[in-house]
Length: 490
Image 1 (cartoon, helix red, strand yellow):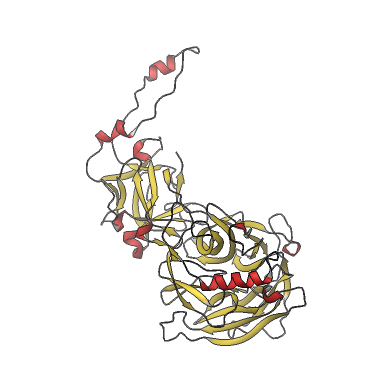
Image 2: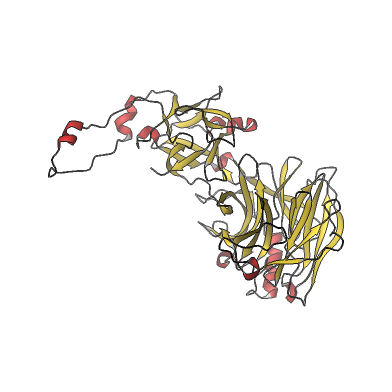
């Protein structure tokens, strides 16, 4: 959680600042990891749902609440103070782990990891009441270990907790999922070094340990980045993609600085189902928010068995290609030929002069288009104006889990893609901001995208290719390429 090069008094000041100061700013531009509302937090816990809302907690006890994973506000409550909590739901209980002391604050590394539970995280719920379980791990300030930054993994009926920082080792213990207490006789096992703010995941027979490398708490000068190793056993040994043990400082890069976001740390998995996974983290510095530490949510991809950060679709003009057929989404309009004499081309001599042909422009074809709404279909991509779509965030319309809603328009026009009441897709003459013209674009774990209309969000309909040339709105099938799309620069 804290980096060695910063003096202890400053580290303490940074920790208090991270927990106690809030900021509220609107979408500042095209950066790809911006959330809306009050997003100022440090060491965010794994985001978890409770009573229809989403919660994350940070250092010192405060936390954030959201109803859609896009707009956040201050108000989550966690007693106990301390640093770097984590949350997991097991049955009707939410277990919270947090640390008191350590982190190099006040010059020491003596710390305790404590557990408490509640049946609701919502302060407005009658089930909101925290019960402290007790201390499950500690460090004495002398040993080569610092017992902070706890992280849960509940898998196959067993509850694991990793903890520790750059100061010495990362350790793992097993807890009793029925009580939250450490299992009798269970001893900690060292599983990594040179990292902190760890997280645990399980996928396809592998346990993954993710940890934050680098330095923190220095705003735009922080070098935080998230790395991973994996093991067939929860207790290790964990190694990276090059076979380097995490106990020797290894780790495959998962996420780092990009765009205006500096210092990626504190990974938390968000498994949203149907092949859609995202992860929460904080950036040490959002350069558009005075360099403050902020919450972010980004897509999670899997490549060759390893997690890697994905990206939201950036504003720009694209071919929207169906993964099912490889055909491109287009306005269903009459084909307009580019003037060309094929006979002269085939009969040209080797020494005849050559010159570039002009690409077909919007002015060449728009006069042939109907004035009203135009249905869309799929066809071979030919870089024609009716196949070029401009993707633009509409942040004032809200968003969903780390991405804003987008408008999708034909390049150079306001002709906008829209969902019809009968669950078909058309391009209306002008964008008006209605829900039917707003789209969720979520990157799936394989790198493709799912495109979902806001107007049918409650029914979970997505743009589906039901044939080589026919797009429609239908329930998304995670086992098929019908609802998977790629955005390619033309």
